[in-house]
Image (cartoon, rainbow, N blue to C red; front, top):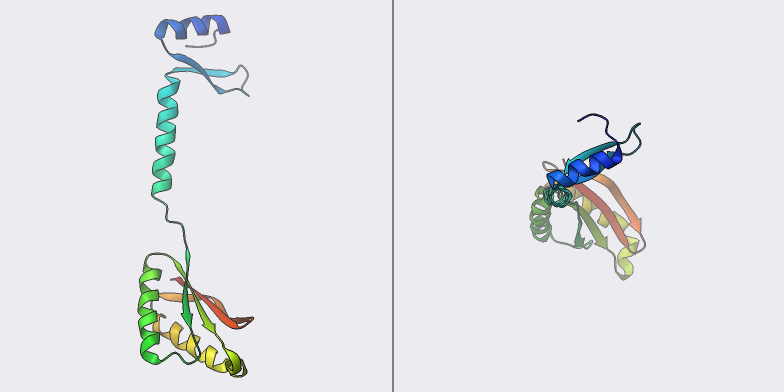
Length: 143
């Protein structure tokens, strides 16, 4: 419609039964638009909701192991971790040490190495095995 004085623009908006909305206040002169502001806000809210609905937040899921975890139990836990990884989550494998098991940390490394070997086709190691107090932690992510 071109450059109009404020009073004239408001009169045009009132006549059209629409709102006069300032879309670029920093421009010289400021840019305004005739629109139904309620409908505009509704569409913005709906668009924002749809964009949030299509995003998957990555969660870190925990798998608990022990130095004496048997091979069959390790395979079962690896199958569960495979499902979690395929959903897009991270998997944190924890080996908990009790009592004198702390003297044999190499057993924990061995369990985590086997666990990672079961998942090497679908996952990569994001964080190498590391001791944190009485537990050894390794983080896996989907390739």
